[in-house]
Length: 362
Image (tube, rainbow, N blue to C red; front, side, top):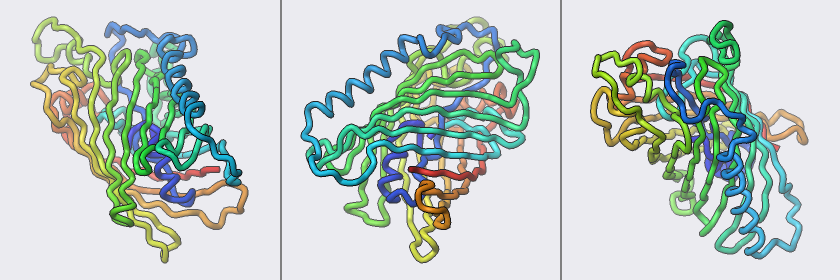
C-alpha cells in the first residue's frame, strides 16, 4: 500500500493537495511465492487472535491516547471532520511489491484499499497532529492462482487480504512520524502469514522549496515474524546444489526516497509526481544463497499523473483519476535470482509496471 505501506505518505498527500488530488503513495503491501515445504514460525494463525496484532494495536493506541492526553486541545471548532475515509481502486499490469517481489506479471491486477482516519488532536504546539489509521487492502487478478484453502487443488482470483493499523504524528511543523503495522494474509500457494512494522519519518520541505519541494523520507521496515520475500525458497530448493544451509530469518531494511511533484493549475489541477527510492537491506532480508548481500538492493523511479474529477457533485467525496508507471532495477544478485521462484520464473534484473485508478477522500 499504500512510497510504502505506511500512512505518512497518505496523510502528507492529503495535506499537500488540500483533498483535491490523489493522496496515495504507490507502494502497497507485498508478498512472495513459497513452496509449501518451507518451515514457518507463523503457520497461518488467526490474525485476530495473534499476540503480535494485539501488541501492535496497543502500541498505536497507546501512542495516540498519550498524545491526546498530554497536549493542549483545540478549543475553537474548526468545522473540519475529525473522521475521514479513503477509497482507492487500483488497476495494474503487475503485482509488484515495494520489496521487488514480482508476484504476478500476467493478466490484470486489481488492488482496492479502504482506510479510515480518526484524528485525535491538531493544534499549533510542537506536536501539531495525531491521527489513528486503520483499514484493509486486497489484491485480485484475472489470472487465477492455486488457492491455499484447497491446498492447491483449486484456483482463485483472490490473492491476498492485509489488515492495516497505525498512528501518524505531525511535529515540529515540517515532520511526520508514522508507525504502521501490517500482516500479509495470503490466499494462494499456502504462503505463511508474516507480520511487519514500518516506521517512517517524512519531511515537508515545501516551506523552503515551494512547488519544487522534494518531500524526502526515511523508512525502517522490519519483519516481526515470518518472511515477506522469497528469500528462503532457494535454500529449500537448492538449485545450485550447495547442500543444507540455515534459512534466513525475519529481518529488516531501510528505504530512502523522495516524492517531488508539480501541479499545473491551468490544466485543471493536473499533478505530476516523480518518486524515486533506494532499498538498503540487512543481509538476511533477501538471504545470501546466490551471492553476498548488496548495500543497495533495489532502485526505483516512477512517474504518476493525477487529475481531480471536479465534475463530481459535492458531498460525494473528493475524487481523482491517476495513471503512471514504476520501474525497478534489482542490484542485489539474490533478489534478481529469486525471481525464478516468482512470476517471471527466471532471473530478472528489471521490471516496469503500469497502473491507473480512481480514489476518493471524504
